[in-house]
Length: 106
Ligand code: FES
Image (cartoon, rainbow, N blue to C red; front, side, top):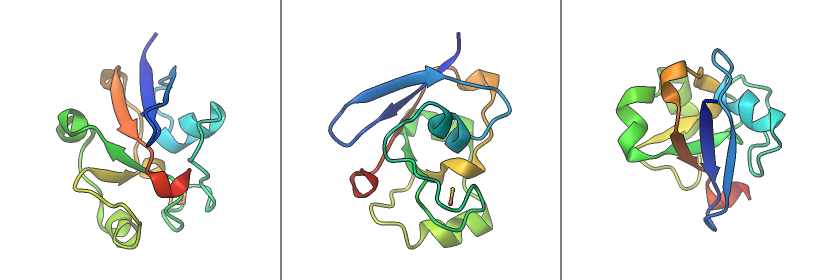
C-alpha cells in the first residue's frame, strides 16, 4: 500500500493511504487528518490546506503555481517548500511522502 504521512507541529504522525489522482487535500480530509480544513473546497482561495513538504520530497512533488503562490504569500508559517495540498495531485511515485501541517492550522 502506498502511503503519505502528515506530521503535526507536535510531531504526531498520521499515515494514510495515498490515492493516486486525488488531491493531497482530499486524501487528508477523507482520512480526517487534523489541521486540513479545506474551507474553500479546493479552489486555492483559503489557505487552510497549507502543508510544508519535507525538503527531500520538494523536487519530486513540484513547485507551486502562480495562483497557489498568491494564496501562500498570506499563509502564516509559509516556508520555501510550502504548498496548498488542494493543488497537489497524488502520484503513485509519491509513496512515502512526508508533509507537515503548520501549527497555525491545528
Ligand atoms: Fe482552500 Fe486549498 S482548500 S486553498
